[in-house]
Length: 145
Image (tube, rainbow, N blue to C red; front, side):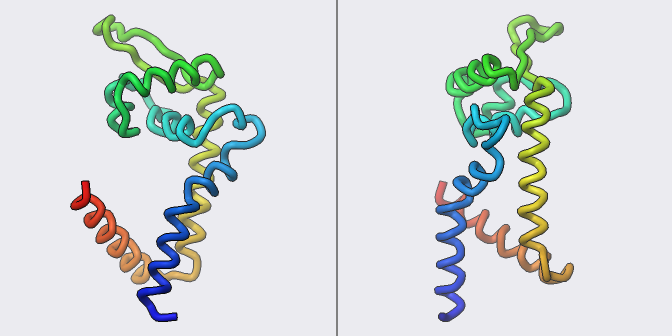
């Protein structure tokens, strides 16, 4: 198989299966009550200081209305807490509960292992070439938006 066909086959397979594999690896056991989209909301909220809904919606790439539905479900399931900003009572701040932080850490571990698997057998120069190739692909995708 030539280089073009190998790259094409690999990219198609990765794009078609990445979210499914991520969901199978992360969304199970104590986290089987959420979806991979919920997990990405949890990731966007993060473990640092509370975030406002607009900032989270921007990171996830959804409207605030769509995010509100997701956050409502995550609050009911015990992953997320909501509070009003003390500076501006109109602003809703969202943070992760202990359960949400545990889910976040599990998701982070999956990403760490995924990157380690990708780097396996590559030296620093080869990793830089891989990063450049991924940047090229990212730039191409931006031109299509």
